Length: 178
Image 1 (cartoon, rainbow, N blue to C red):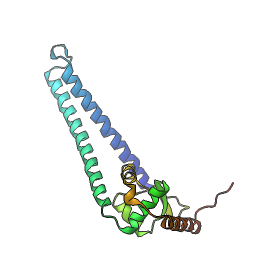
Image 2 (image 1 turned 30 degrees about the horizontal axis):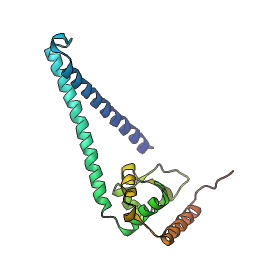
Image 3 (image 1 turned 90 degrees about the vertical axis):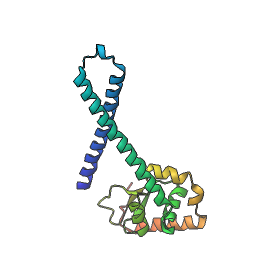
Image 4 (image 1 turned 180 degrees about the vertical axis):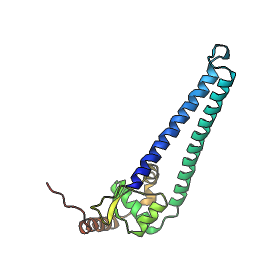
């Protein structure tokens, strides 16, 4: 529950930062195109608008740079995945499923999460050992554009499909009722 609250709070902070950045851009535009002689802002007020706008833009640029840096690190980690990790990503690409139900105890799954190549979706109480894991959109686009590197044969794909079906059937998933 606290993880959900933290996620909501972080989402609100994230949106607020982008709103502040938009205000910063607006302030810069006002200062750049509004003539001083007709401006309702006196000199000191113009300075404060400039100062706040510059701070907002600096925050936005820093946030954007941080996101680019984080993604570069994730892509570097993609070059160093193990065979088991690559096999899971290849299965996702081959099946066209960005979200897979995987065991939370699987070493390859945990490693992909730690590397930022997968994220665990909300865990449900009725799913004791399996839960949905999703490949982030930017990673998904990247690996799908390099399908040749993440190709698996028919036999291996069918074997993995059977493994996953057995894991789902044997690990406490609720039966569907019609």
